[in-house]
Image 1: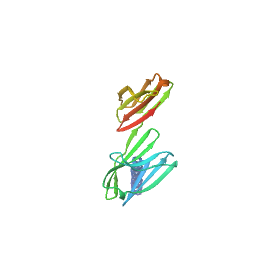
Image 2: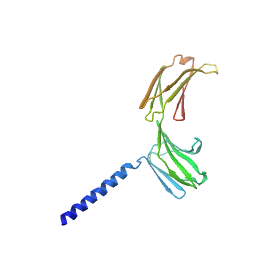
Image 3: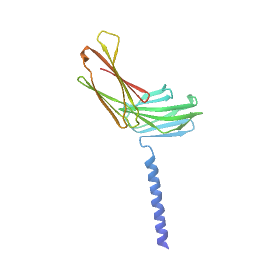
Image 4: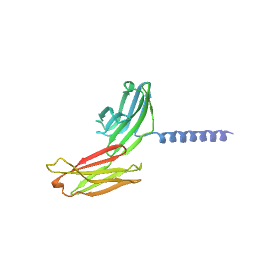
Length: 199
């Protein structure tokens, strides 16, 4: 009888351990958010110096912004009472990744929704070649427009207009001739965002 109770206790202990392990596995390890009344505390477990943090409304207007000047753990408390009821999101921009953490505000209390990750395109120039790459795990297309402006002129000419799409990674190389005769402007548009580079 004692053996049965011992095995039952061990079985329950193992089940409890597995359940707690699974609950930790589902938690977000990059950030955590605690909402207590009208205070919202955002903690970034792996912050990187230079990361841009902003609060935006659904139209993309910036309501708050700062550059994080620490590496490691970052913690900040926000009082969102100044915002009217509606939909907003925290935006974290670092390297080639933008994290959006959407939330709905009701009487100063925030309720958070599932995060979204937007991958920024990468532009590399080598001599007269331009390499464009972007992770496209979400299947978002990448609109590419390249304009050329001759030296001492004001009018630009559209030399490339193309929509690229993939389900994993977008890669494209363009040859830009006559760089010494003027300036190229590369405008990339994806996921309702624009990215720009002048050469």
